[in-house]
Length: 289
Image (cartoon, rainbow, N blue to C red; front, side, top):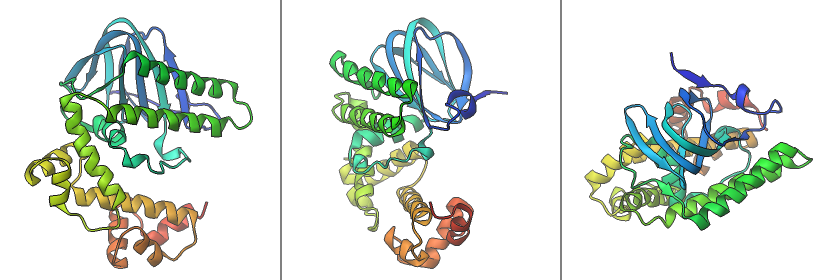
């Protein structure tokens, strides 16, 4: 039975959804998965990173994200030093605003964690020394806020975490590696879908943005996200609808049109398919925040 790291064991009792774990050095740790996501910054040394049947070498400057359900471990450790930023995506209260327009955000935080074949190291984010200094400074500020826990720490820590995510997304967008560019092209397509979430999907346009044939684009998109473009868009629309149902008392039909559905009955069917509840049941269960 695989080991799963629990939220209650790795986050502060006050429930704040961000935690920093510094490993200097990282000791051997059995294969494990998480109930949370993990942003890993390699600050020194090297090792073999193993996820399932795939493995690749980590060195200082590597940055990657591990989705909670993905099992991983470190082998052949040689003075490996890490900054692990643990976070619960669904509990973060600060919105992404226009960060989803940055292709590097999708590449690093959406596409990389779900890649099927991780043997190639060419697509990973590897920071230069100057870039690493900026990221470590932000991580240090985040860790200080979480340790001091002075009044207002929640806002300051969340803002610093979001700044860190934004800077890493920009760094990925300027990544020169060929494999990284391939992921960025899919990231550009995701950004386009985010900006046009209310519109009908134009597969030809998406494939053109990704510089692929339509057949190749569909295959790569499905592999990277686990869904077709239409299913991905519907999922994003439903997520937005969930937020509106929790935060407002607006009529369900209005919300359906607001998030991009032209038919309220179709919206209800898709909402139940994704969440297991009708919109009305979801609002009753979660109430208005």
